[in-house]
Every structure is written in structure tokens, then in C-alpha cells.
Length: 548
Ligand code: ADP
Ligand code: MG
Image (cartoon, rainbow, N blue to C red; front, top):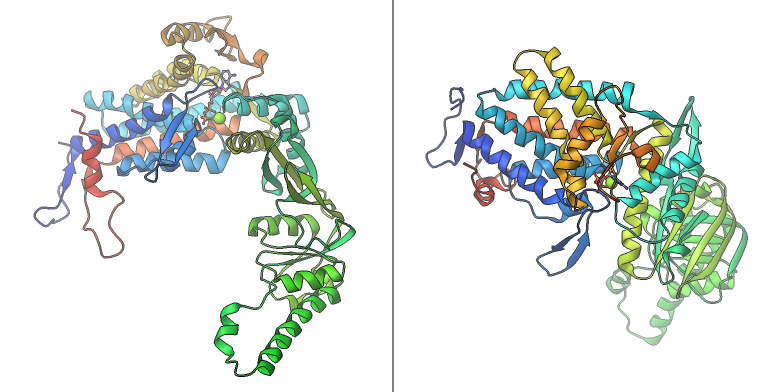
């Protein structure tokens, strides 16, 4: 048992696991998660079928989607799921890599623990290796890319799209992703910033992936509210409301107590009056287009149509915000507070037919840095898959524009780091050296898994890769060619990823692995009280099984 005097006085019967037992239990759980997603890594990764308690099925090979959906009980496993989410938020890519690496770092750590290397020493060694890895990526492995180099940005986009599986029109999707990010890129203080949140993704099934297009402006998944409204409004003045243009039914029921037909009539007149006032307020502001987050009463729609105003109701909050950014409009709550200064501008608002349905196109916006990618595909499943791929592509292209550095993919970066870290290890000295070596070994899980998922002999591939990265003719860009499992220059195959994705995946993996290693005591706190103790509690731990 690892040292440590008990500082808690525990009630009899409290579940507790200490020392090596605790560490082994946590490591097992985390590794189980890593093993589960490993087979999805890379372009040849297998899909997972997720079935929820309602029997609904999701089929995906996206690491973070899998981990978000799976109901994980064990606290250490949950930590790994968090890593995937962090990686996804920060980079939009590299989630599977981060989780698989974390699992492998823990596996190697287990061997060291057996050799009586203290967890703190392992953690310190891992951090030293991480620091050196970051330095190597920056100084030796990274390849500079100019922010406006379209062909290289397209390579980055295509690598991300390609590793999500294979679908048609890949090249077109890559070009669209690059063009979209370039449109939203701006220079600020000598830096290039590409805010992908400005890019709106809209899906419409029917047609083919080839029909996917980039639209300069905002496309809303909504038709105009009344058939008498104009189909096209030029020189649009747009009002955005996050409230409804209706009279709440509950208000009416609460207030009226009708005793005679004349009372009924006066009530209806009153209601009509307030509808007219709403429309008058819109007209007074000078708006010829009104977009609301909530509903619009049919009577109001009728009056708006009569006034030649184009109205769209029930628009998502996030879309309203994008419209505000694009047109310069201010989102207003009460229609009576609407002023001319709140209106946004666009050259044209038009209803168009896409597939079997109508959509609203807002083009020629005041802010030219707002675009929509309208995703098309045969079925909903296809458009969803394409959306996930495009989301990844947008993020990797923006990372590349912002940082200007890419790394070779296909495991090349990991193998090169492994070779170089093995040389670095002796300079660290002490027992930490063993941890640096373990770190190097752990990195090789990436090319290993890529080869294995491609159906190749992973041992042969790894041996080939190692030798290509050593000696006088070493080439840091050699990785796994998924077409034949052979060692190939990834810059020739144009398989490149943003350095940011690599750096962040390493950091997240080390962070979670060392955090799990440092735990030597698991105590199940009492349930109840402030909302239920640790997630999962001890109950979940048994489920993953004790390793030894
Ligand atoms: P992640 O969730 O970590 O991004 P992916 O399933 O997207 O996982 O796989 C990414 C890995 O696949 C990276 O190591 C990347 O270099 C590699 N990869 C992607 N496309 C190719 C390819 N065409 N050939 C070889 N490796 C590839
Ligand atoms: Mg990926």
C-alpha cells in the first residue's frame, strides 16, 4: 500500500478503496473507454452503433459523439469523456486521438507502477515529455502554412473530411469549407482571426451532396408566414424580435367573462386593435421584413401581408443572433420599442424553393463576413454525417489560418516525436527517464491503430515507420499510407493536420492521465444532501471490473 496516514474518520461501512487497488481500478476503467473508441480512429475506422434506452440508433465513427452518447458510470471513465469534450470544444478535431493516447499513457504507467515507480514521478516524467513534444512540434515537425494559401488549407480540410469516412463530392466540400472560412477571416492587430461561429450550417435533404453550396448571406430554414407576402424584398430593412406577435391565450381566458354577444364583439375588437398596433409599430420603424423567435398570430400575418411586409416566425435564437451579426440589426423584445436604429440591412430577402421545401435567403448583408453552407444529401442520415465532417473541416481550416502551422498526419508526427523523445529521455535522468520512454512508446499507439484499422499488419508498419524516422536519411513526414499500409511521405499524400490539434491532444491526454494516476484513494461520499455525491459513486466501479 502506498503511504499516507488516514486523515478522514470514516463511518463504518463507507466504501473505500486505497493505494494500488484504487489506481488499478481507475486505470482499468479509463483504458476500457480508450479501447472502445480506438477502432474508430482514422479514415478506415469502424463505425459504432449506439442504442439508447428508447431503442433509438445512432451510427457514427466520431469519437466525441460516441463518448457523449454512451452512459458512462465510472468516475475515472467520466474524466476521459470530459477530455474528449474539451478537445472537441478547443479544436473540433483530434478527440479520438486524445482519448486513445490517454488510455495508452495509463497502460504504460501501469507497468511503471509495477516496477515501484511512484505515480508522482511518472506524472513529472510525462509532463517533461509533453513539454519537449511541444517544443519539437514547434521547432522541428511543424510545417508553416500561409493564411491565404488555398491549396494547403484545402489539404487540411480534406484530411479532416476524409477521416470521417468516405462520401462523394469530398473535394467540393473541402473547397466550400475553405472558402467559407476565408470569407469570415479578418485581420485584427496583425493577426488573422477566423470566427467559424459566423458560418451558418443549414441542412436540407433531397438532392445530392454535390448540390451543397456556399451562400453569401444567411439562409433560414423557414418560409414566409403568409402566401400574400412578397416573394422578394429588395433593399430589406429587417426587424428582429425575440418575442411573439400574438396575444397570449391564457391572458384572454383569465380576463374575460363574456355575458352577451356585444361583449364578445368588444373583446374581439380589442384583440384586433392590439394586433393592428403591433403591425403599426413594425411599419412605423420602417421595417419591410420582420423575423421573430416566437409565433405570429394569423391575423397579424394577414395585416403584415397587406402592408407588403415579409415575415418569418419561429426562428431559432442562434439564427436570430447570426442574422443580427450579419445585418447589423438589434434584437428587440417588445415590438412597441422598435426604432429605425434597431433595423438591419440586406440587399435582398427572398423565398426560394430548395428540394421540396421553401427557405428564406437573406443576401447582400451589411456585414459581408456572414455565410451559410447549405448542406444537401439524399437522406437525413447523409446530411447529418456531412454536417459533422464540415464542422470538423471548418475548425481545422480556421486553426490553420490563425496559427499558420500544420503537422504531417497518418501517425508521422507521433512516430517522429517517439523517436526523438527516446533520445531525449536520458537527458532527463532519474526515474523520470523511464516515464519519458513510456510516453514515447505510448505515442506509437496512433500509427499502430491506424494500420490495424486499415487491416494491415501493425507490427510491420511500425517497424517500417521507426526506421524511416531514424538515421541519416530520416524523414519526419513518413506516416501510414492507408491505401497499402506502407510507410509514405504524408506531405506527398497531402495528409496534414493543424499543429494546434496535435498539441492540444497531447496536452489533454497527459492532463487526464496524470490526474487519474495521482488518485490513490477512492471514497464514496454519502449520497443525497447537496445533490447526490460523486457521479456514479462506488456502484459504478464494480461494473468495470477489478484488473488484478
Ligand atoms: P480524431 O477524432 O482524433 O480526429 P479521426 O478518426 O479523425 O480521429 O482520425 C485522425 C487520424 O487519422 C489522424 O492521426 C490523421 O493523421 C489520420 N488520418 C486521417 N486521414 C488519413 C489518411 N488519408 N491517411 C493516413 N492517416 C490519416
Ligand atoms: Mg478527425
